[in-house]
Length: 205
Image: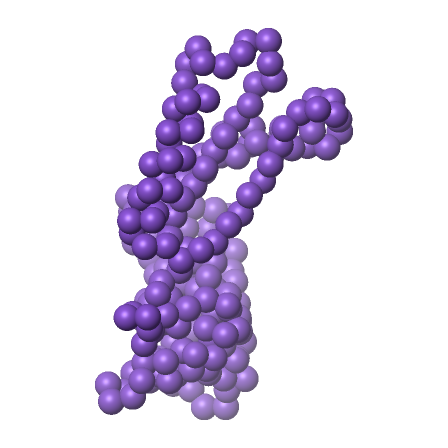
């Protein structure tokens, strides 16, 4: 069943009072970070202001506002003579309404399906169940459990080396027949992925 998400902007003069999106642009607009960008946009902000509000790099913001501009929900004042960090992103209407369906139409096809299965639902369910059981004391007091979320800026060589060493540990401890059948069954699921772009104007730093 279709529902609608709607945002109002404190603007006095726009090309349209309301802009309704009901086609395949919804998949672009409803990306969580892009929707958050729209939520904090107000009457308009520069790339730098959005970057500071969302705590992501200006290069990442620029990518997303350009994608939003392609859908027509925002205007990007991209003066070629100005620093891109000062380009302003403005809402295209006083009210923007986006149709949302359980399986929203998407324009990115295979790429989007790959993103959706980065942590397969069955795997996520197993881990969430295990954490609930651990909280209830099912495994006793001596089991090992860890949840790590780490961020760092790495070179391609450093990321490759980290991945190689991690895979070596997995191959050492998790191959079939390697474990102790009398022990507790452990699961490990890791995701190494870029989460932000290099800041604008600092590519040589």
